[in-house]
Structure formats: structure tokens, C-alpha cells
Image 1 (cartoon, rainbow, N blue to C red):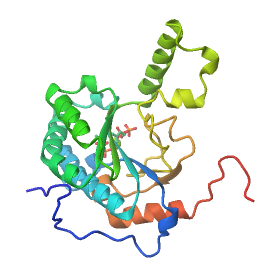
Image 2 (cartoon, protein in one colour):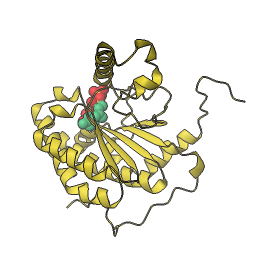
Image 3 (tube, protein in one colour):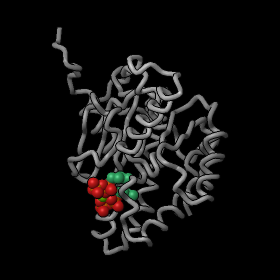
Image 4 (cartoon, protein in one colour):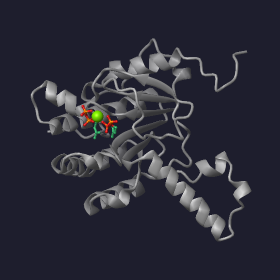
Length: 257
Ligand code: IPE
Ligand code: IPE
Ligand code: MG
């Protein structure tokens, strides 16, 4: 039996920030490419889908830790536009898993003040999942706790092409002067409009690539790649990533004074 994501009377106490981390220098926005579920399962002689099941547990605990530790936004890559190329059985397992988790966890998310949103082309998702997403988004929209973005059928190139189309339509209608398209105008047409850019990107399972994730938004993110497979990602792994982040010097193209 899986525990609710977050509950009013929580079964676990609020987790406090590890003492070696500086609460004043945490990333406001953490993005994560949750990779390695399949390998986690294979190492145990289990079918790949069992890795996805366990990956949900890792996501639940990461959300709780980020919320407890004072991180304002968590954005997680759950399913890419390229992931449709996987065997049909795995894709349908994932869609069913997403539906089940969302249905089961929604009440807890509401109670814990999480504001959940889904980024990606949601129109291609099964109808049942789409309506759960609509419901969850609406019911948590005015929550003031952690902002939790789940990228589902998300692809950065698709997102950027959509922005280009939308801006071109506005120009064609005479509503927008092409010269008025600047970085801020462009960013406000992205699905992440209104969110700060991620400060820290974590990718698990030791892969050094972005896999079409938030190409615009990650322009100045600090990257933390860990060999930990996503289902094993825990408080120690998160604290390690945050510690790594706190040792970086962010220069944004400038020089240190
Ligand atoms: C990430 O784990 C989950 C999704 C992409 C949905 P993978 O399924 O990619 O696991 P590996 O990379 O095959 O180990
Ligand atoms: C990226 O992982 C997508 C998600 C985590 C949802 P993949 O496993 O699909 O990426 P590649 O194929 O290794 O680049
Ligand atoms: Mg993978």
C-alpha cells in the first residue's frame, strides 16, 4: 500500500534541512531529470515498469523534502515527447501509473498546500489523465506552498516551436510588432511563464545530456549529475546536490567583484 504523498497529520515529521546546508543559499527552483528507472529494475531482475513504480516513491519523497527544506519550486521531467517511441506496453503502463498516482495523491497535495501544474502537450494524453490533470491544476491553483511542475509529454523543441507559432499569429493579426519581441516577451509565451528559471538541474543515472528538457529555461542553471538511479534518489542524494550547488560560483557571464 502506498502512503499518501502528503497528509494533514503526517506520518513523518517535518524533515529539517541538513546542518551543513546554508538555508540562505538554497536554489529557489530545482529541476530534475528523473532517469534510471529501467536500469534500477534490471539490476534487480525486475521488469522495467517496476522501476517506474519505485520512481514515483522517489518523486514523492523529493517533493516532500523540497517543501520541508524551503525550496519554492520543483520541476520534474516525467515523460518526454520522445518517450512515445518506447514499447507500447511501457507507455501504457506509465499513463496508467500517472492516472493512479494523481487520483490517489490529490487530496494530500491540496492539504499540504502544493500547487501542481503540468507542462507539455497534454492533448495527446489519455482523456482520463487529462481530466485528472485539469481537476488537480484547478483545485491547487491558489495554494501558496511549493510549486510543483510535472513535465508530461514535454519536449523543449516542441514548446519553442509553439511559442514561435503563437508570436507569429499575433504579428499576423496586427497585435504584435516583431520588434517588440524581446527575451521577456518570448519567455512569457513559454509554458513556464511566471516561473523563475531553474537554478539547479539534477540528472540521475549518470547521463550527461538534457534530453530536450527546458532548453531555454536552463540557460544559466547549475548542473548536478549523479550516478544514483532515480528510484534510489533520497534525502542524502538531494542534500548532496544542494551542497554541490552551494559550492558553485554563479557568474552569469560577469566577473566576481
Ligand atoms: C526514466 O527512467 C523514466 C522515464 C523516462 C519515463 P528510464 O525509463 O529512462 O530508465 P533507464 O534510463 O532506461 O534506466
Ligand atoms: C529523459 O530520460 C526523459 C525523462 C526523464 C522523462 P530518457 O531516458 O528518456 O532520456 P534519453 O533517452 O536517455 O536521452
Ligand atoms: Mg532513461
